[in-house]
Length: 378
Image 1 (cartoon, rainbow, N blue to C red):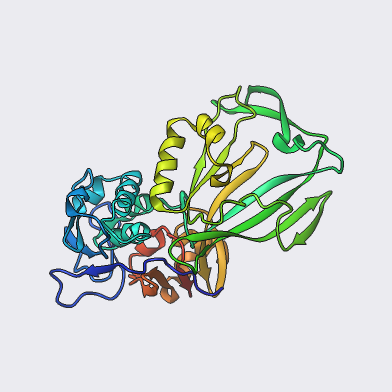
Image 2 (cartoon, rainbow, N blue to C red):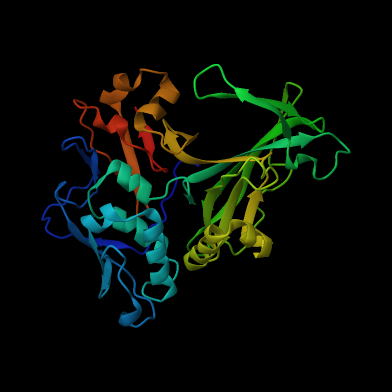
């Protein structure tokens, strides 16, 4: 795989007030804010935009505006910078999903609409990143790294539910720290590191989870496998939308799940399941369709990653990684400034790759947080 597709088909931006729209992403740095200006937007002062949508089957009176004032008008969503700045990822996800559910937009287009709105106006880099739900709402630019225990032959089936046992907790040497002594279970002989990719579906909007590969680590040796011993995400085949949750637990809740991945056949279904899960996670996991979610015990670690291409090689990076950190992971610490004059960054947008204009004099681009799918070369 040399390019990571963005799933924005069916959404078109209406460019207003810009006779010669720029064909690239640009960075502005007014005051302390680092702002990303999307293609087609004149400058960092732009405050309003329209995003054309494909209408659904609904009457106009059920297409309610968002809490912040985003609204459907004819065949477009009217977007304001003020509404985006005050919104949260949860609010935007809920509103766009409700538009799809009520037939205000064509089925399967809520995800594309969400991204198109964020690409319609200048936004602070950190705010844009949070509104995209990077690392929580999992799409074709994501991968999951799963670390799970390898058990000895004949071990009980539930031996891996809690691979380690805490034997003591005491104050640490540094102020405010604690020292935790952990004893590994005798049933655990090693661990497996497995990778799963999210791929664009070919039968309509949405994504699917596919195991990539795995490594078995036992007694200092490493065995490479084409896939994990157990597929941790064997969900309903109709699942197309996915959301990652890291649960907090009290010390007494040792057997509770640590990580849950919810799925839905539609964006509206995922929103409904999310609402029920957040209201009472324990009750939801007891009553919900077992094929609609994947829950991991404390012995299993699951971390979301972003996929970007660095000098022609697809790499897995942690959410929150900046351009600077991505370069340093490849070249070494302190090397980012040295490659800046040769740097080229392409961001995925509506199925195409759009360049990011660089100002090598400021180096602002090094602080740009990667959202997944970018191509970086130097």
